[in-house]
Length: 171
Image (cartoon, rainbow, N blue to C red; front, side):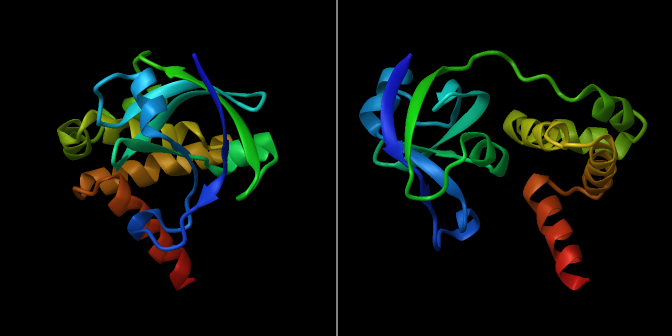
């Protein structure tokens, strides 16, 4: 397990990452975690005392990686941009399971399931985690319906979220 202290940052203008809260994992630390690796990989550990698992580190060039800090993580640690954060990380090689309720519904929609399995495994996992992270059962059900509708129309995770944002903005 690698331990270090870092500052929570936020992207101002960075394409689709604009507004993301994140921490940087410097190249030397990333190499201790996964030597020779330059691609995204998952980690587990702690942010302060908050346990995390199956969190993706994403390459940013020059050997550095970033870890997005989502709203649930920020709430759990009680910190925002500029705060110092104690980090403990190790590689998380445990395979991610696709949400069972989502798979059950997906099996009833041949175009959706065909498109879903054509996506890279990481994109399949994004959709499943988005569904899993719903705080209530009605929200989880709504997300399953949104995902199946989008997949049936050949939309991936990012396109699906953009469509949902456009619908909210139009209201």
